Length: 309
Image 1 (cartoon, rainbow, N blue to C red):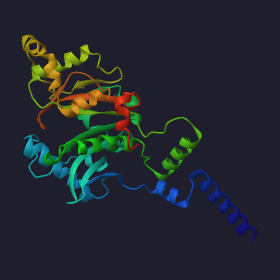
Image 2 (cartoon, rainbow, N blue to C red; image 1 turned 90 degrees about the vertical axis):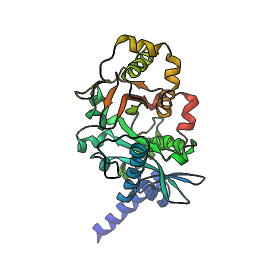
Image 3 (cartoon, rainbow, N blue to C red; image 1 turned 45 degrees about the vertical axis):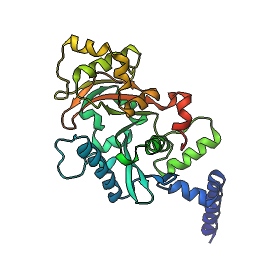
Image 4 (cartoon, one colour; image 1 turned 60 degrees about the vertical axis):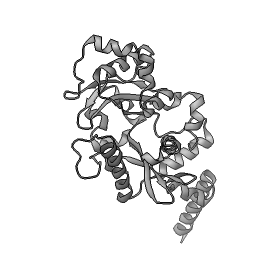
């Protein structure tokens, strides 16, 4: 009998402690089981994929954009873009409310999940010096695309903000409680990761233009001091003559203005490139590896980018 009373008192004390720490029971439940919906804006819902069907909707959108529209993914023939990394990634989705269709997607691979994949996706294309030191502070992003009929900017903006929300989203109930406690009792910012990195592609496959872009960004001081990416055998660009690179450098400003919107978006956030570009022959793109320190995003972009955090 005495043991039962003591156990009850301990239970009540523990419950009181959690209520004092976390607030109401509803607040505690929301931290232990956070909603997959990150935001709603007009006719759009930003959420994390929860089911295999939702992940498949993202994979089908990727196929539509990368294969059918852009003519990439040479080896992909089954109407869906998927690889062995997908089961371990977080898939951000923008869903059109009236139709229920996935119209935008971004996938993210937190560094701690590479214990299951063996390495990051981009490590198949690049040998990345310095990545081990950042692995548990980094999140790899990629496969970003938006359905062509929804490219007004709103969907892309939601996906950008979703990355910030993902950064502040604990990966477990226990981590959620620690994060809540840290925010209440410390000025130290809780975040699941500090670095975004991944491959960003050019829209052209001219190696001379790619090397010229590398030289222009290097001249601007946009080379990462933390990571060095070296194309693996089979991913090197074809050699080019110096005069071909110089011909592109003569129109350097125009060359940078013609960078894909995603690449320019990363640069506005303060991204650095990690080395010379590589050629992904299967995907059909020239890729740079970029790194963004999310703690160093310029103030004029931080408010918009972090609006869901």
